[in-house]
Image 1: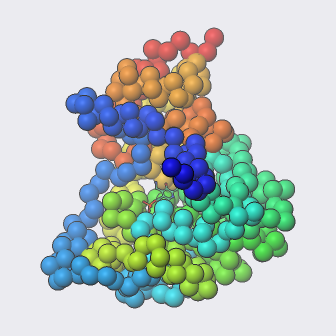
Image 2: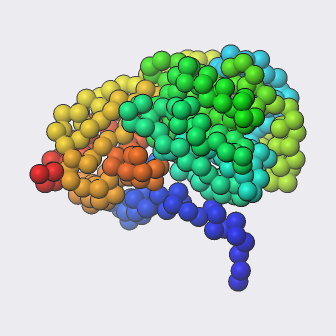
Length: 393
Ligand code: PMP
């Protein structure tokens, strides 16, 4: 039987990136005691007040269809949360609720990009971006994030990539996997390019609440940018709610109108009891967020300290996010071999960086969403494995 061309565009490298993870999951199911740190899922439970509201909402009978773009109360809560974080006024009319940031990204790409057009995407990039852009039919124009700039996007690297077919720039700050946070001055230059060339800026900010050093700046807050920026965010990482599938897009009202049409034929609205719980999450204040952020920071510092003592590992300190990147090149192994070798020898699963782009092909990515004791044990096992390798002559 024949399948659409779309099926080819959504099954590239990114979809294959998870080989180590799938193998680790298979081994765990087979009864092996494996530490799995190859995906970015927080270990924290969703805060009890949010869970309680979901249950109460179900008991109230919120099991019917709900608003396609999200209930007014939730959209207002998101607009307020976004406004407070981005420092720019937004109203419910600027918000569409989606099934996670992933769904919001996909929807935004479909409503902004046409086949034959290009979107500029800095690399290393989050693994699903290739398929998201592919689904729209547009092409990705990759721009390197350079280690000498701390993997932060530079307008100077973007400018030469802009051509007649360029429609948008897709950024992710704080970045998955590097944890890099684009500085205000760097964003201002990028914003100037977007205004000059009439480009959309798609800003994936799912790690915006996990900035340890410096500030998170949303490009929507810069002059003349709210009308050409779509901010993608969710409760997944900030509130430890990955499984709830609750995210959103914030942007100009005209775009929201189109996203509403897409949602109507694709999602048909987010479940009402999850929306009720999301309102509680967004109105719960910074307490819980600060606690989780402090835990990620402590874990980052501890594992960084532990692994930095291994002569063949290089460990840059990420400014944000829930990952630690480790350059394994001096062990003499490729990151792919290191990841599979670590799984075989020490029963620890980490993700090879090549999945995100060639600049970090010699790195592995460790998820910090695991208890401190597990990460400490991970550090010991990684050190032992790295030291068992011959190293570069
Ligand atoms: N963007 C980035 C950069 C991510 O890391 C993730 C999740 N790992 C997503 C989007 C999707 O998040 P969500 O769970 O909200 O769909």
